[in-house]
Length: 438
Ligand SMILES: NC(=O)C1=CN([C@@H]2O[C@H](COP(=O)(O)OP(=O)(O)OC[C@H]3O[C@@H](n4cnc5c(N)ncnc54)[C@H](OP(=O)(O)O)[C@@H]3O)[C@@H](O)[C@H]2O)C=CC1
Ligand SMILES: N[C@@H](CC=O)C(=O)O
Ligand code: NA
Image 1 (cartoon, rainbow, N blue to C red):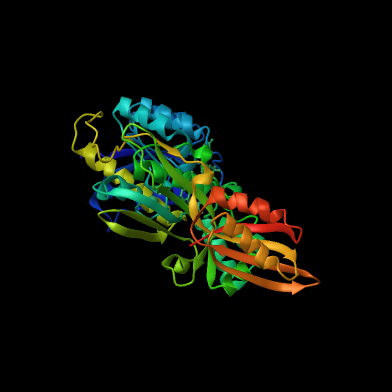
Image 2 (tube, rainbow, N blue to C red):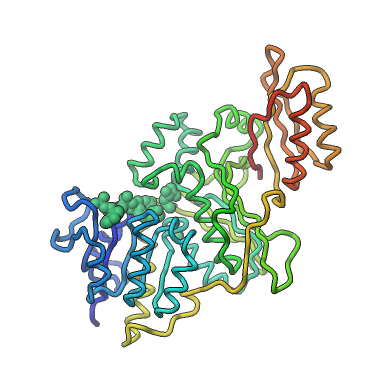
């Protein structure tokens, strides 16, 4: 069999992991030995790297990879939107299949890329783009295809989970632990994408498209990160028996559209209180966990390392092997696409208004420590038909008190109306924080 030529766009954390697997095929699937790393694009030829490949295959010109006739699969692991998006499209138009770990590009330009791939008769596989080493993309496309999916949720950013776990267990400060996440290769090149929640929003956009059958507009996902999370909320959550995790959630609403209408999905990313006995509370460090719910499967949980060189490379190589396996069976460069591997949307979906979201909430208010204030707050919630699970007063001193409310599952539009009225109470100074709660 002729070797399958691989071109790598990028030799950073993920690229080096991929090169290491390809250059050491022993004891792996026999197809790994049939892969040949032909050319690798980087920015800086002189950078020291943790991989042994000949300098002669490095280039600073990514277009050389696109135009190289000995390359059949282009692996984009450079990150960022441009030039990554253009290079992926150029590779597709040159008849090459593409494997990418780039969730930022796929969440924004996935439909365009998928249409280009279909027209060119090539594959674009993205297993590394969500959940790092956890197989979640192919299971959603293939193994769970017989289900009506109702909800996809979980922890899908390794950096923030690593930060929250270490802050919680070791009391290490935020800046220090973020620096460690960068050194370990977990964080994005601009870590704002991790801590502000945008990386998790990219990933839940991709998962929504696969689970519910239609791409959604990434820009419409309400997103809150962990960057504004206050120690005081972490402490109060702990006192109430919860940990805090950055969760991404996508679910079908209760009202179902007719088959022609666009399917509304409630999709959001926010720090969320997780009861200490919930399985997600035990997901620590760089690990991710994704819960898929549907009919008839019920619930299925995917767990494992969500970032880092080796785990992410494992997912990239799985995609390469999928394509190489099919290609090795075909004489032609352009083959009949396997409909499961090249899954495309089958209906229209959109992100529902934020007010339509139904969930439990944690709310912290700063109020005067005066008699009757909790009663007044309770009355406003009652008038708006919002049922409260608990209301607790903490740290009353100097006539000031912190009041924490945990609601039952309620509609967010109703909650926002109630909070406006509560903020107008003369005894209430401000609403200090708001999070989700499981
Ligand atoms: N790190 C992780 O755990 C995970 C990352 N991902 C995704 O994988 C992708 C890569 O991430 P990661 O490996 O961490 O990123 P790095 O920053 O470590 O690596 C990026 C690589 O791309 C090269 N590069 C960047 N721009 C250009 C350019 N214009 N021309 C040529 N080469 C270029 C860099 O070259 P040089 O080395 O010379 O600077 C570097 O080798 C991103 O999309 C990321 O979101 C997905 C899952 C997990
Ligand atoms: N920065 C990302 C990398 C993997 O997708 C994360 O921390 O999850
Ligand atoms: Na994955």
